[in-house]
Length: 309
Image 1 (cartoon, rainbow, N blue to C red):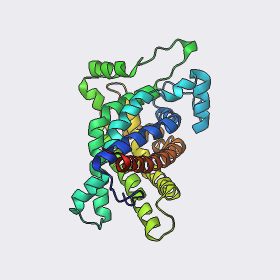
Image 2 (image 1 turned 90 degrees about the horizontal axis):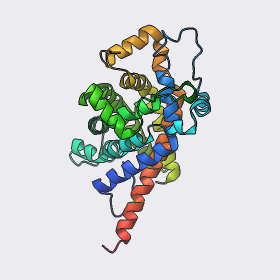
Image 3 (image 1 turned 90 degrees about the vertical axis):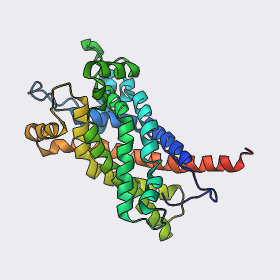
Image 4 (image 1 turned 120 degrees about the vertical axis):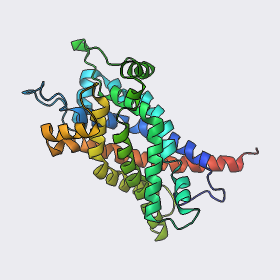
């Protein structure tokens, strides 16, 4: 990504990978309750046939958060956090940390990077990241979707992150850990392209026309725009991905069947369920992640310059 800041010493690939993974974890810690609310809203309606006549359990972002805190306790908002942090360390580090490297590969080292090379780089690192991190995403979604109701004596689906990995592998086979891999690759190709490319281009234009310096206000503005664009394009795929990964074996024959079932039973608006928490989450996640990424990257470079080793 353009810009440098502290800089005669350019960040190495290792610095970018480390900075991206760490920034992803920081962003997840801050925005995880919004992500959990988004998942709950997205899966609401799956059991519509059995819940006919009953009111929707969750209404709106903050209504969902309030209901969860009231019925399941505050800790429910961070259900799946460990798997979420596992995911970011293996996922954000690849898709964000290797983005500049892939741009160089597609432009063969040229300084003039076109939109095509940026899109290809975003698709490539997004697909690579999903390949590595899919099991962590499956476990994270399962934890976020599981409802804890102490008064009803309901049994939790999984008791710990490690137990979830083991149970899924045992009951559904190792391929169960890669459930929803194809819709997730599709989603992350879209997310990476809209998120990283939007951030990259907007930041480049801000600096090119001297609207801001390469600092926090610039990073904030570019990150906010990236979050908004990403939510618009990625929401339908994100809902299908969440439903499919959270489904029991045999519920859907595939991602396309899941999407078709949603369309027939719930209508086209089902694809934008949880849109507001998605936007709140992606917008805030992008801001925290990109600002953290730029600052961590600069901090590591500063440390390298000052280190006597």
